[in-house]
Image 1 (cartoon, rainbow, N blue to C red):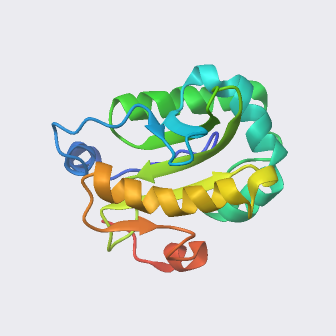
Image 2: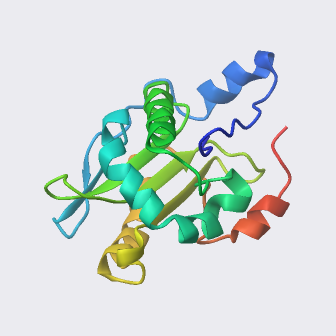
Length: 186
């Protein structure tokens, strides 16, 4: 599940936590490791701690807009986030990806020299879905061709490459405020 730096959302009690993590994906599921966007100029791959050099300026350069999207729900990204805190966050994401607990895919230019956004694929926190997906692009690409391509691509990719029957696209097919109002999973 996605949380911003320093925020640890409670998971179900220990006895049910293992079941919750294991059952959201089939045991034999292999997550995609590199996914080209149809434009041939961008790709997604699981984020790593080593991406901090590219992630930190992308996040902090778009921080006000990202806070407006994710702040109330995730507490991210805080105005005071340091490079070291971002590194810790990305290392945690990398471990969650390896454990199939949640997924953070970074959006890169074809050369892999610019991080331009992220796609989050998380187990559901709210009733009515088997996964919760959201994404963003850096301010420079908001409303542009790259954001439009990502908006069209992500739902198709989730449908074809992921084992979900009821994905929820938070911030797209459901507003964040409507999502927060849904009942929590027990």
